[in-house]
Amino acid sequence: MYGARDGNHVLFYHEGGVDVGDVDSKASSFTVPICSTLTEADVTTLIAKVPAERQAVVGKFLKALYDLFADLHFTYLEINPLVFTGGKCHILDLAAKLDETAGFEVGTKWGNIDFPSPFGRESTPEEKHIADLDAKTGASLKLTILNAEGRIWTMVAGGGASVVYADTICGLGYTDELANYGEYSGAPNTAQTYEYAKTILKLMTKEPHPSGEPKLLIVGGGIANFTNVALTFKGLVQALREFDDALKSVNGRVYVRRGGPNYQEGLKILRELDVELQTPIEVYGPETHMTAIVGMALGIRECTRPAVAFSDPSDQRELVNSDDIAPQTSSERKSSRSTSMANAASAADMAPKVVEQARDDNVIFTSKTRCIIYGMQPRAVQGMLDFDYVCRRETYSVAAMVYPFGGYHTQKFYWGTKEVLIPCYPSVETATSKHPDVDVVVNFSSFRSAYDSTLDVLKYPSIKIIAIIAEGIPEKRTKELLMKAREKNVTIIGPATVGGIKPGCFRIGNTGGMLDNILAAKLYRPGAVAYVSRSGGMSNELNNIISRNADGVFEGVAIGGDRYPGSTFMVSLA
Image 1 (cartoon, rainbow, N blue to C red):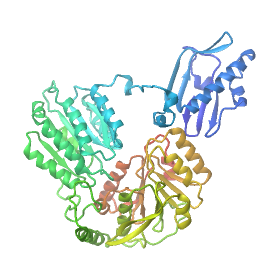
Image 2: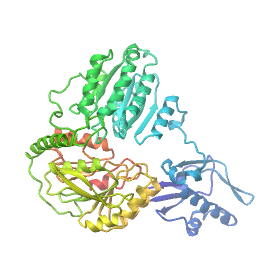
Image 3: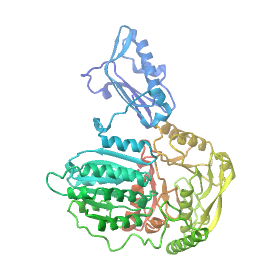
């Protein structure tokens, strides 16, 4: 038995053992549709070759086994051999996989289960430490040691970026030297980044490389959508200071490339650290290609910083207060915002105004698209309004918010330099009835409640697109949502997505990052290149690459990183 996008597949063969051969080609098979169960008629078809006197017992066993498979959120289960003797079925060997994300739903039924470590080996103390940190935070912290004696260590922000950096290192012929694989993402704070960096540096500096060559730390990542780069780099700086002598003992060298909110400040403190420490630190921003630092670190590419910076940090500032910005008075905030929006509007004015267009089945977003935000996400809402303003939309794209844990109220936001009030309702029913022009919902519910909240949204026929931001929704529940969405002709973007963007028209949540990145990547007006990505971080990196090598992005969608995204690559491209 195994789960698939279209349902659960059941294969049964009346013979077994080590010499059974190719079961897939021999076995009787049946696909149980989503939200359905295995019926007695289905079982009878599967066990047709079992001797008649045994069929009743075997059929009852198979039906009960499938019910258990579905109820406990198994994704794979194989029994070989299944032995019939003494009028009973006996399992002699079994291999199975559980959907770990369903632990909050059926963990009590599972009992005390220890999930095995990746790659079939025992986790090291360092891996266990990072896994423990990961379990205690909403951020994502992952670490796998591939070769503790390796020369090339990575500290990469983002799941998609971690794959890109590992592929680049291996593609250049340094597979045997790659020491680790992992990521830190999801807006970790300074302390979490410090612990992650300290763990890697401790492993990296245990002893010099046998060849005497320098040990390398590649701190890479794409252009973040919402992670505060300066905040995370403060944790990295703290760890690098602590391990400066140890890095010198292994001839350590550090290469950094990063972009995103407050990246200018983050890169600045690292460049200052390069002067302070004995360890050489090469620092680059989004003006440098993401993987260029790999070739620089390995000595096969010259270390050269581009003459033109990505953006001028004196002109564009993050519009929403972040933890590392000093408090301002109301008049100071308005003055600062007026300057920022004036600069942004000046840059955007060079682009032609987007022609208003109505939505049809072949167009996901238009300049008239309006949405409801499910969840209390003021930072994302403000970012969407700032995007709308520099795109010169006639009205802002967020019509309302829904927050089930409070009564009706309004929240203050900025439309350019003007203060506006956006209503917040306790239910989707009220929000959709008050705003019949809305056809998009951006669902920021947690993975625990995203299933129920999305089912609620699907009740209302005016909603045609739902973006599900949460990652870690149980696979069974995701498939049920996708089936119900297909029945109602609703497009699902996600789960586990940052969203999507239609330059000059509409963006979902934090897609495209902060205002400086919107301007630098020319996302305030449509270009000619469309893309589909699974990774949110890599979608923002694509915005940067496309804006530098073509006339900009026409439309971009991050379909999501979970196993069953709402739409596949081919469907999105069609």
